[in-house]
Image (cartoon, rainbow, N blue to C red; front, side):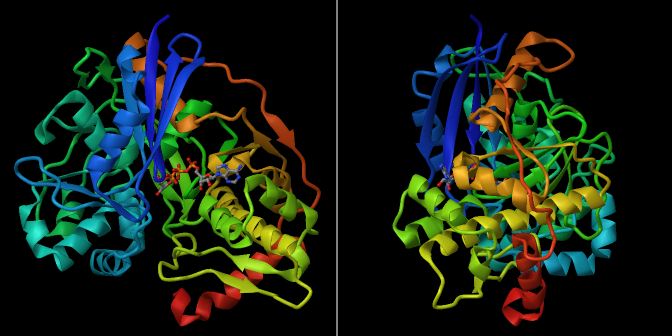
Length: 468
Ligand SMILES: Nc1ncnc2c1ncn2[C@@H]1O[C@H](COP(=O)(O)OP(=O)(O)O)[C@@H](O)[C@H]1O
Ligand SMILES: O=C(CO)[C@@H](O)[C@H](O)COP(=O)(O)O
């Protein structure tokens, strides 16, 4: 049996899958946690990769790394990390996002040039923040790359000069064009004040190097593009991924061009495109309320499912760690409609409904961008929640399909590794088990539903100074 390994270096942990290259059957897996926080020394990801991949990686004939998008890994002339990586969910560069947008052509020009309207998540704004706030670190920086680029370089034992990235992760920087497939050096200079060495953008199925044990290394990819590849998304398929981030995405033949900035014009891992909406708050919203209620996952689900739809009028605006969609980087959560009649069950239900309603906004934005939605697939850590599965169709107003539980990002990375190893023109078509289909009754947005409660509160709070 030919084995390949797929790595998902995501926000909270590293997951490694060892997979049969022919069938996609998962033979073995490992996992290791990452430190908490919105900045992280890249060495911690490398240690987690060693731990999660112990006894697995050396058995693989090909390896690929998918990773959390956008994180700024800045390196000096000796390829040493200059400062802890600023992650996609770090909102400190929101003022730089606003300034760069205003000073250099406005949202339309950025969307046309880079597929993105700048938000604090994107790498360009993090570079601008470092240039403004840490001039000594900025002066030392000679190259910049993304988490999966850095890990891929480490796996190959390569130097920064030899480093590679892929289209999907390059498309989340703010200095790469999905239209031309090339970097846009002027945008990088506008952000950082000067040029920097950037990783070469490899072809989707390229072999970019070898590991010390002789396995081939594929280019890797951003985590959402990894999930799209792992799921084998086709026309009309839209994935909703509930990890630290909540993401709504599908594959397309042309890049999105959304001057409102809600839908990002990313590229995918196969040569196509990946329109995507991202919220900063998803699985951790449930973690926070679960901890406050002092219950485990199963007890939390039972509570949420015991409450009536609408949670007795209790409504959560789930922007606990600031928010990207809508663009409220300094926002905090808001709980509205609290009465003496509120129950623990209402509180759990409000958390689930508020988190899902924010994703419903993402689905609506994808439709507004012309993305056809024939099937909604629910994945990510919080898709394991029975409450999320049962409540999602009622909040989204459409049936939801849950694929068999798996780490689809790591599976996508493994599929890319198998593709590079095979030398074939297209990725392997691995079969998954059957999806579970869940049906809801309430239509999204109709009066009295969670979406209506959420959107009213969302709009009412838009004028709050703390939410602008
Ligand atoms: N049964 C469950 N119910 C709700 N949330 C869950 C459940 N199992 C795991 N999670 C949550 O999923 C999250 C991790 O998901 P994951 O997709 O790996 O995140 P990330 O990709 O951001 O690292 C954690 O916040 C965890 O608490
Ligand atoms: O910023 C984005 C997408 O634009 C996030 O989706 C990150 O890529 C992190 O993903 P998770 O670790 O939450 O899966």
